[in-house]
Every structure is written in C-alpha cells, then in structure tokens.
Amino acid sequence: SRNRNRLCVLDFGGALGTSYIQNRQFLAHLDSLRWHIVEQPPVAAAGRRLFEDEHLRFFDSIEDATAAAAPDIVMLCGVVQYLPEPFELIAGIQALAPSLIVLDRVVVLEEAPTRLTVQTVPPRIYDASYPCWVFNRGAVVEAFADGYRILLHCPAHADEIVYLLDAKATYGGWLFERR
Image 1 (cartoon, rainbow, N blue to C red):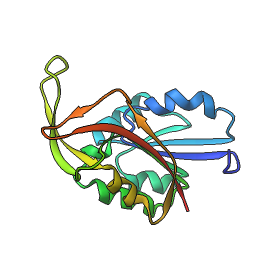
Image 2 (cartoon, rainbow, N blue to C red):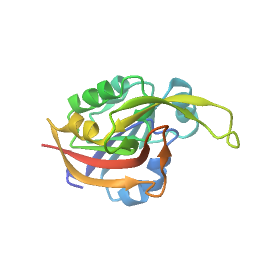
Image 3 (tube, rainbow, N blue to C red):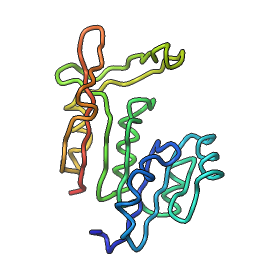
C-alpha cells in the first residue's frame, strides 16, 4: 500500500505459488498486484501451464522476471541455503534495489562459521541428500549491511533444531528495508 497501492513481488524459489495463495486475500485491496515466481525451468513451465493468471506469473530466471517488472519486494524463503553461491545471489538481489527483502527459513548458527553441509532427507519421506549451507547469523546480517537495515528478525520454525556433528543450528527469518 505504501507504493501507490501497487505491488510487484519477486518470489525466488516460490514453487507453484504457495506464498501467493496464502497471502492474496491480504493483497486484494491493491490496485495492481504482480507476483513473479522464479523457479527451475520444469517447475516454472508447470506453473505457467497450471496456475498462471493476471497476477501470478512464472519465470526461469531473475533476468526474465525483472524484464517484465521491477520488484518492490523480493522473497527468499527456504531457498538460499540450497544455492551454489548464496551470497552472490543476495548481492544480485540487492542490486535490483527492491524496497524490501524477505529472507526466511534460513538455517543459521549463532557462533560457528558458515559451512557447507549435506542435508539427508529422512527415509520415511524419500531417499535423498542435498548440499546445504548453514550460515553464521552475523554473516547473513553483514551481507545486507551496506544497503539495507533490519526491520524485523524472528525465529522461523522456532521449535526445530538442526543437529550438526559439532553444533546446533536454528531457522531464522529477516525483513530488510532499503536505506
């Protein structure tokens, strides 16, 4: 509403629009709403085929999404820890100069340094493992320090602990506002 009742969301790793579906009732008053999801090409193609409408669109890349419209807010929810170069993505997102950046469901350590780990999916779900970054909380905050300030920090999945061989990590979330 602060932006002349217009909003463009870039939802990086937004799957098939779960966050959009969960929040669209709160955004119905807007004169203009664009929700752009950037996903892996097969997911984006399925989204275009099954769910795309006048507000919700799916893209294979950030470049394609931002060519369609500059984002007012960027959402990075449960995704940065699975990227090969997460801090490069964060710098690239900041270069887009959105007013707000939501960083949520990020695995963080209080004291230990950032590290690359292997996440093993419990066999009862399915048999798989993935490379996964576990970030030092200070390193996450520092990555935004030059251009953004913290509006909100809160635990995500407050009761969940990620057990590493030598440490315990938790999930965190932040709302950053451009200075």
